[in-house]
Length: 160
Image 1 (cartoon, helix red, strand yellow):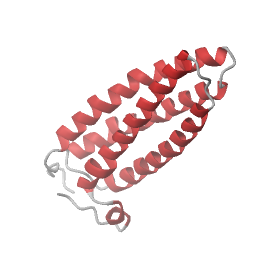
Image 2: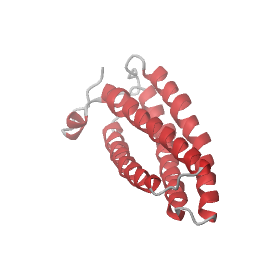
Image 3: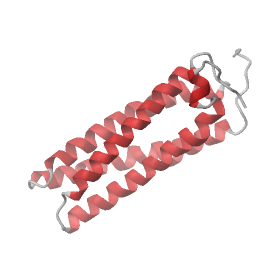
């Protein structure tokens, strides 16, 4: 791609939606969930849950930072020679998020039937639903504007 390349139609709007709807939401909600889990852990309730949520939050923050500082600006400029490698890396991280979600769901099953645990479980379930929507908005929409995974693997990034 040349420096004069144009972003596919709708890219800035899709990025703005992802930033506002998902990145800002995750940054606001994950610390609250970690604090709730830490409060329960202080009482001996599923101590691993707080640690797992904190690790998920850290991994998600690193992932979102890559998107915000590298991927999204590159997309808004129409792509680039390394976009395929970056997209492949971020898609691998999406798969890692799925594994982390599976472990989170296992840990949530161990919560007792208390109002505090129910509030934490509800918040975690919302976070999981949001994260699934976030990944889908990227993998099944935004990222496809810069070529399907199979095309990138073959070195043929397709621009809309």
